Image (cartoon, rainbow, N blue to C red; front, side):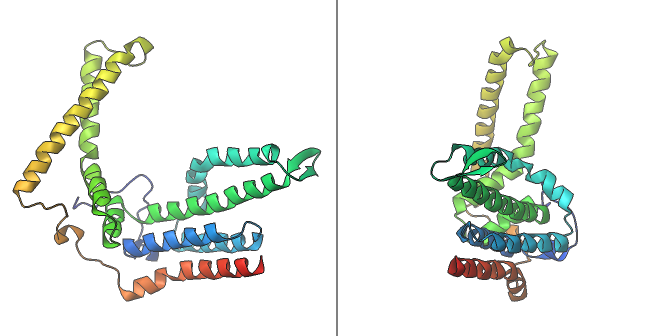
Length: 256
């Protein structure tokens, strides 16, 4: 864990956003998302303001729009559901290009698209500027329940070990004539998954007992977190985005 594991979404850079402590970025992202969700769906102008905030942070973090757009495709199933709402919704209807669409369905589709897209983009910016290890450290500094941070820590630490174990088991199966492409060999694949689970469980037990014998009490030592805790200046800088978003949301609630 001391090497600072990076994930597939992380983009190495020395931007001001990358240099912020992870806890302030996590808090800013959550508060921004809450402000977006609290905004009435009829306040169209407010979502334009949120989009400008996201674009500003992306430019500051040196994350390009093409990278964000390609990764945001993860919300495609929700987009398809949103497009179906105008046709399936009840209540008053309106004619658009010869199609009879539900007014409530149109509002619901816009609500899902606008808020969902902004939330996905904010999450992608957090992931692009923060390593997995720093995300866990930030959650721990924000007093996230230890059971969650500990599970995530061990998962990150031993994920590569399990992937390597699964790869070796697959090579062993193939060398003995097994071909996982055929459906009738699905039973062997299922047995391999079960064996991998048992090996992972036994390895976890041995690691846990070894840690307990060395003084582990259920919480990672302070040295694991290292330095770099957020300063007052970093908190103030990161609070800019959620404060602007909260102001937009408050004005939208008053005007709507």
